[in-house]
Image 1 (cartoon, rainbow, N blue to C red):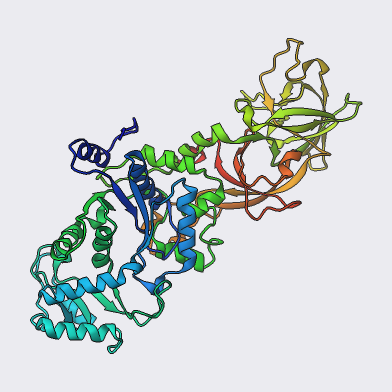
Image 2 (image 1 turned 90 degrees about the vertical axis):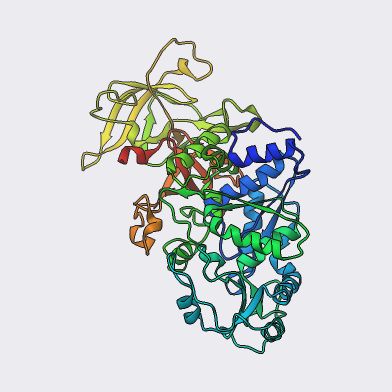
Amino acid sequence: MIVSEKPTNFIRTKIADQIKQGQIQEIVTRFPPEPNGYLHVGHAKSICLNFGLAEEFGGRCNLRFDDTNPEKESQEYIDAIEADVRWLGFEWAELCHTADYFDQLFEWALHLIRNGDAYVDEQSAEEMRANRGTLTEPGIDSPYRDRSPEENEALFLKMRDGELPEGAAILRAKISMSAPNVNLRDPALYRIRHISHPRAGDRWCIYPTYDYAHGQSDAIEGITHSLCTLEFEDHRPLYEWLLKKLPVPSRPKQTEFSRLELEGTVTSKRKLNALVQDGHVSGWDDPRMPTIAGMRRRGYSPEGIRLFCERIGVTRKPNTIELQILEGSIRDDLEGRAHKAMAVLDPLKVVVTNWDQAPLELDVPWHPKRPELGSRTMVFGRELYIDRSDFELEPPEGFFRLVPGGSVRLKYGFIVDFEDVILDVDGRVSEVHVRYDPETRSGQDQSGRKVKGTIHWVHAESANEVDVRMYDRLFTVPDPGNYDDPASVINPESLIDGKAMVEPALSNLMPDAYFQFERVGFFKQDPESQDGQMIYNRSVTLKDAWAKKK
C-alpha cells in the first residue's frame, strides 16, 4: 500500500508503522453513529478520519448504526445519515446495525453470567446511583452481587421473556466496586425496555448498553482500529475487559482523538433538537444549523468540509476551532468551483442616455478560469441596475466606483461616464444617468482608457427578481454550547430575507451548481426553488465580516 503525502497525524503514523512492520494486513475502520438525530460538523471529522484512513491505506470502512436505544431512534435519522456520508464523498464497505448482532450479544451475555462475570441486579436506579461511590470514595457492592450463575441466568431469561417490568432489574458486569475508574464499577450491560425497535421489531424487550455492544460489534466486524473521541478514553478499560472475557472472533484496538469543538456552534443533539422542536430554526436542515444537512442546504461543498477537516488535523489535545477556519475552507474551495454571476441586492436604476439601439447580447463565461463550465448570455441595454452602494454623491476618500464627474467599467460591458443624477422628494438618489463609451467594450477595447473601478450590474428589462436568504452565524456568543438554553443567545440577524435582481441565467434551476455573486458572496439555490420562484441562500461572505466586528 502506498502512503500519500497528506498532512500526517499520530493515528496515521501509527497505522503506517503497523503496516510496515507487518502487524496488520488490512485496516478496517467503522463510523458508528447512533441514529437519534442528524449528523453535525463534529461527525464530519470522524467520517473523514475513518473513511479517509481506510481509503488511503487500501482498507475498508463500515457504516454501523449503533441502534441500541429504540425510544430515541428512527428511520428518518438513518436515511439522513446515509445521505450525509455519501454526500461527503464516501461509500461504506458494509452497512451494519448493532441490532443485527442482538442474538450474538445475548449469547455472550449468557457466557459472562455462566463464568461468574455478570449478575442481575434488582436494586432501584436510586440505590445503584447512591452505591456507586465517587471519584475519591469506592462504591458499595450490590446485595445481589453474589448470586449464583444459575440464579442470574434464570433472572436474565425472565428479563428477556418480558416477565419483569422496566426498572425492575439490569444485567451488570462483575468487575470491582472499588475500581478507581468508575466505569469499571460493575457497569450495566443490559436494561429492560418494553418498546418496539425500528429494525428488530417487537422481538426484544431487553437492549444492550453502548459500552457492552460497541466493542463486541467491532469484534464481529473485524475492526482493526476503533477510533473514538477522548470522552471514551475512560471507557477503554471496560472495552478491553469485555473483549478479554468473551470468545470474540477478533481483538480490535481502541484509539482516542480530540473531538471537534467549533466556536459559535452547538453540537449537543438534545439542544439541537430543542431548537428544532421549539421553532427557533426551520428544521434539522436549516442552513444555520451545524448539521451536515444544514451545511449542504446552505451551499457548503463537501470538498470544502473535507478541506476543513484536513486543516484542523487530528490530535489528542482538546481545543476549540475558530469558525473562521471552517468558513475560510469553504471560501477557498468555492472560489475555484463556483459559477460567477451578477446579482444586485439593493438596485439603483442607471439610464445609459446615449444607448439608442436594441439590447446587446453578451456571451459571458461562467468562470474565467474554468472553460468547462461553459457560458451564459447577459444583456446590455439602455436601462440597468447597479447596487446602490456603488454610487456616492459625496464619495469618501478611496471610493473608486461611480461618482459625479467620474467613470467606471461595467464588468463584461463598457466604460460609462457620469452624466446626471435624479433625486426623489426626500433627497435620495432615485436614478443615475450615464453615457457609455462604445470603444470600450470588454474584450474588444482598443481605446486605451483606464478606470480604477469595475462594478457589477444587470439589465433592468431582462433581469429577474429572486428571493435571497442572507444567513449568518446562529448565535451571538462563541460558546453557545455552555448555555442551558442556547436559544437565549440566538443572533436575531442570523437570517435576513431579501430580494435581488439577477441576470436571466440565474432564473433557471441549477440545483447542483455553486454560485459566486460578483462582489457579494457565495450562494446556492435552495431546494425549495422552483421555476418562477427562485431562492438563493448565502453560503458564506467573500470575506470574514465577523473579524471586523471583533
